[in-house]
Length: 75
Image 1 (cartoon, rainbow, N blue to C red):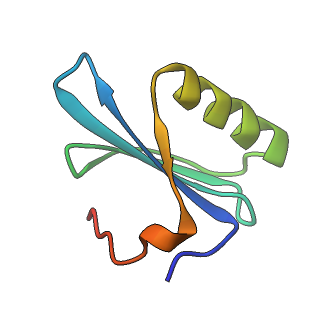
Image 2: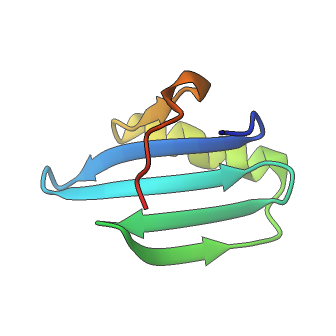
C-alpha cells in the first residue's frame, strides 16, 4: 500500500527512456530510476526542495501515481 507522504512519478526522457522517481517527504529522500535501474539517491532534502523537484518533473511531462493505483508494481 502506498503511503500518503511518498509520491511516485513516471515520465519519458527523450521519448524513449522510462524514468521513475520516488519522493519521500518524511525522510527527505529522492530516488530516481532509469528503466528500473537505480540512477540517483539524494538524502537530506527539505520539503520545499522536494516540492521544487516535483514541479520540475511535472514540467517534463511527468505523471504522479495516485494512491488508488496500488497494485501497480514498477520495481
